[in-house]
Image 1 (cartoon, rainbow, N blue to C red):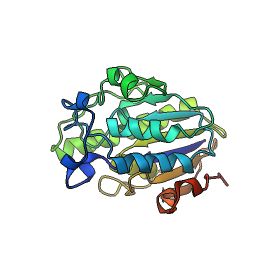
Image 2: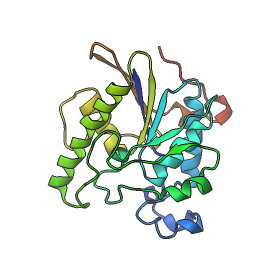
Image 3: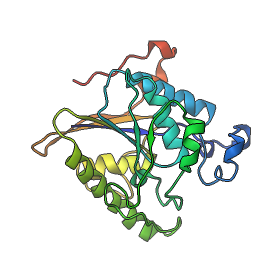
Length: 236
């Protein structure tokens, strides 16, 4: 199977002046802990979707945070047949206390044209939905790294062959998933790769257990002057 890892677009917490990036009034109670995408972040997600438009995904998974779901929905609008977005709480941010992320009652209001499958408790992967509070570095790392095997084992139990999977997650956790868990690299610090907003990575996991790294933080879609000229990615 081919596992694509997409970092979310620029969020209000990725800029120095978040007050100049307005959010939907209905989100005033969640915005501080779960920031939305900026206009630039939405544009990045749209461009990533154009880059991935040539891939027909068999499944799309997003973390539960607003910036992750918005990136997934915005990007997947470029698919010939819009896939459903399955929420996996395991894909949340490093040490994030809000494992439930964006309340599901907001899904129809914010993404009326997309089918979003809410998370279940426990997670479909079997991973416990209990993470330590942010700031407890030792326990954070233990919990953080524990999520990876649940996700990779879940993917291997559902997909194989030429199946194409998209994971929309955060920078640090995406790096750990790609390097430490999917590729089996030795852990270095908290993660193995650093991703740009909407950087695209992809690893092929063959049925014999071997892996092939195809992409790491690919950002062609961010460098093309015109969005209409972004070339769709082709697996080779």
